[in-house]
Image (cartoon, rainbow, N blue to C red):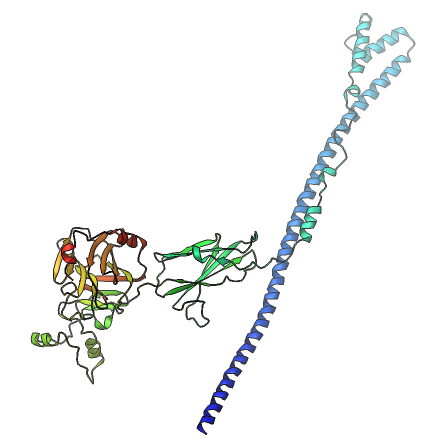
Length: 512
């Protein structure tokens, strides 16, 4: 009976889930129909805008061309009117000469004829003795008349065919106007993609040449899952738009997940194509935060920042030295009833006394890891290194055989030293603004670098036998820790080029 009930309950539960899926699918279909209607209206609106713009351009071109024809018409008419005015003036002068000449030829009296000739030619001649000269001047006046000098050919033609327009080619082009094709999905060249120095270079190509491609869109998101992106992946896609080339470098990333999903789509003027098949690139790096629950009470810890706070331990109960000694290696006893303030205090009693220490919250026992530390300018004393988990509550980094560090002191003068097993080696090097920590657990290497120049500060060589935790000591001031960093290429190169021990650190390297 119980088995049948359970079976029925499973069937009912499955059916209910299926009903929910159908309801969700119906909602999705209705939403899709609504989107189709909206997008169709938007497409028609954009089409109207394009054609209105085309009409506007054609109308503007028509007005400009018509204005050119009208200017050519006015120029030709003006030229012909000037020529017509010249002809009219010449004709009037010629007719006047003809009329006077005809009147002179009709005179029969020689004396009167000579008088007429003198008047006809020039009044200043005045006497009969000059009749021969007058006759010559009459000839000259007639032959030099404007009627003989004027051109009887029009200066311009009446043809306007040079201002005709052939729209055959444009008509064919307009008839060839079609909807923009949807670009095909790009293909990411996985072999050409590069992940290094917290940067990702992505390279892709189009499956075929497409001159209409205007730009590309690249999307990426972090994930802890290998393979294709998951529908329920909690990470959202970040977008880089208007990429003109077929390669792009994402820089300054924090690799706080193991992988990165990448996809690309091509866009022309109006439409974006399908996304490329997504690729998954491995981007894992060492990520940790500072463990505030085990830090010294005088330390104020927030995620990856620690600050020395001299007022933090004022409420701490005084513990006798003998009691301290007996409890130094034992965990604090559990308490059944404590106030919130005493609860916070009891959860932070891992380090006490002058061990102003805080550890990372993530240990590692294999692989190569890298992180960086930046100290505030007012820091008086701080240490950066690694330790096994058994570091005692009164122990300080570098003073035990299970911790390694470099120590910086900023008192009367700034000093840099390497510490391990209560041994100290002064390093004659300037203290950098940021310190890079590189640890090759399997290779037994712990190196410290100038994070800016990648100059090697010190290297410990040993055999690590237990999981390691990042460790930090701070007195006066604050430290900022940067995690999620890959081992820099420059550090890898320096590590490969090292042949043997650094002579300045050999005395400490032998103490493991």
